[in-house]
Image (cartoon, rainbow, N blue to C red; front, top):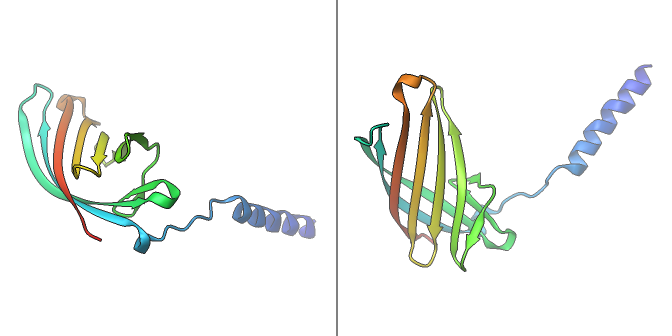
Length: 139
């Protein structure tokens, strides 16, 4: 019985490592864009709640058709034209879910996003945010 369990465990470990996506990104070979972004957040009635500035590092793995924000992979990338990409992201915090639709144009070096922020507390309502940014290629 011990041998059967041991063989079962070894088989599972072996199969999971063989079937896993073994792609390891080579960030040093990717084109990097730094986008300086200004974002305005609106409450449920459309009033401005805050204005924030931040930057995003976008890495393009052209060889494998992948994009990374900071070093986090982006899923469901839609290509619009030769060098314009659109994708959705979702971030969950302790008290909200932020869903964003982001578009990056490598020709014009522009970053645009629209977000919806849903709070756990319904009293806040649904917030929205719009962001625009200019990018520059770092390498």
